[in-house]
Amino acid sequence: MIKNISADSMAIIKRMQQSELTESVIYEEIAKFAKGEENRQTLMRLAKEEKAHYEIWKKYTGIEMQPEKFKIFKYKMLARIFGFTFAVKLMERGEENSQEEYDKLAKEVEESIIIRQQEEEHENALLNMLDEERLQYVGSMVLGLNDALVELTGSLAGFTFAMQNTRLIALSGLIIGISATFSMASSEFLAAKSEGRDDALKSCAYTGTAYLVTVVLLILPYLLLGNSQYILALGLMMLTVILIIAGFTYYTSVAQDQPFKSRFAEMAIISISVAVISFFVGVAAKAILGVDI
Image (tube, rainbow, N blue to C red; front, top):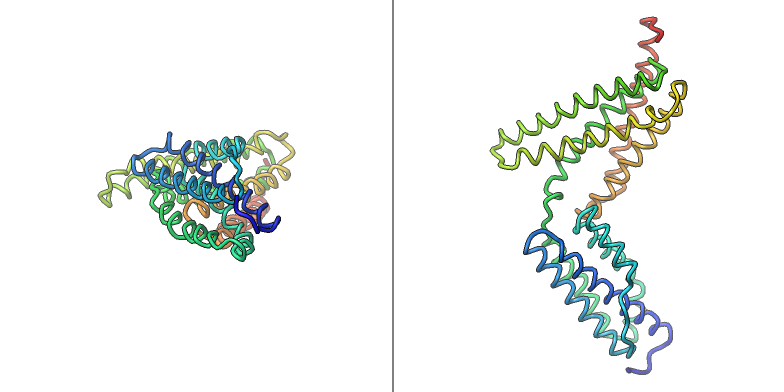
């Protein structure tokens, strides 16, 4: 065991040693079910590097550690649900937060500078080599998601005051939503075909699925609440819009290393603006036409 290291620095080393071992196991576990031989090899290389860092820290602590089972389980589940690229990049984001600890440690342990450089350069380069199918179709998912949010949010907001009945609003929204799903998916298919792409069917499937899931989530408050609770349903629908935008934007910001705040603000402002305008259009249409449902 190497001496002359302060208690604070030794505590940091132990945390890093534990983290490196756990992340090594996580990479190995994800590699077992990741699609693509190149992806699996990249993940195994990352696992070996993390294990090598663990061995370096063990020289200082003299302690043999066990990986954190809950953390392994957590990232395995995230990888299966949201894809391995999202899971490992989210995990590496946690390491970015340890910059201050590395700065403190560098004053006593020069070797920590080398490890930090490896993580910033080599490991980031390896992460960028990961090639996951679902991320190739993020553009198609954004198309379906964004179009559904803008179109259906506006329609449901307009229907809310015009009809003032949750069942009628849900029925109208469902008809529009399902029709628009097929329309959007077929348009994406034809667009991809015209570009000579071989993945036209997959592209339209991602677009249609994103659209349909958004439709169901937005209509759900109108189906669950009573006929007269249309204002509450509208409020919950708008909250759902914000949550969908936040969730999807966060996913793409992590998986594709894109800014979160600007993209979230842009999508949220557009969707909410359309909803507000459509709501007042519904108010005006009902007053001008004299329709009372």
